[in-house]
Length: 320
Image (cartoon, rainbow, N blue to C red; front, side, top):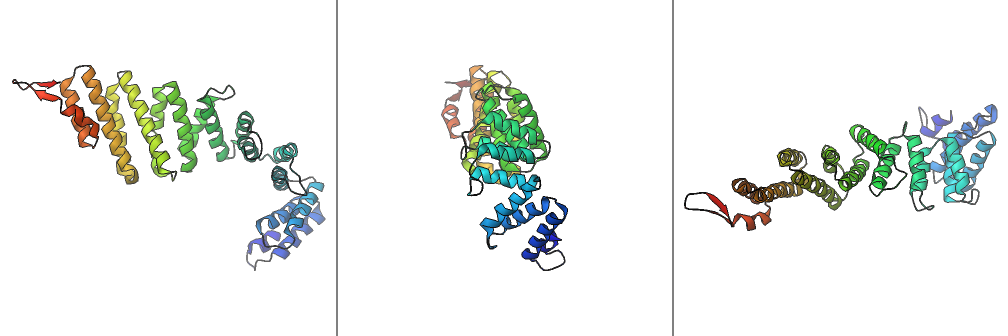
């Protein structure tokens, strides 16, 4: 009945009646969930009278009956923040949050320096516990293990981080979270100079087009993925794979006009790099074609190479 009056389901919203029904339920059944619902009612409605007194009163009544996940979560959060009735106590906060199995809040507690000294290993542990039913835990677990794996933290589980990241990126549409996971993946694979890993990153370039993150951050990640992978292709003599990268960039241009400028630049960059590679192996004609393509794509640096190509009296292309 309390929920009916709180939400106005088939009747007028009446928060006082909702409170009374919630409390009556707990008084009659000794079930703590009624008191926890009453506390949450006051938490959600800032204009209710005596709010600062009612929230702790109902939480303590719920606790006296054994507590429940909702009241345990609220009590844990209050111990993190610190209030007159629940003075700041991280150990007590952890006790209540573990009892409520709210592993996301526990992970956030140990990964956010606002409340305590961060303990990323412990944060990762709690996020892992919460992954089965909380996608945010998946995202944060993947980020922590990949990001800190890239700087050689001994506690990380990078293989599992990669597995969780791939699953999250394929099934979730929270592109802002996905962007930071992609960034962590790139940092790890770039440091390892791992071609297959960086190729995996290119499978998720669409995230950069979809997310609303700062455009400078998006462009930087976009550029870095393509720049690093193309360098590895050239260094490992896989220049044939540059065409595949160009194809992916072309698709990005068609799908996301808002990042067309950086995409055109990257297309020009790839052609430019291929031109330098061809010069180094004395493939003069191929080098010219690559520099010409780069220049047509707006990559101005290609011009300083193009002017050095000349044809001899027999029409053969030379580079001077």
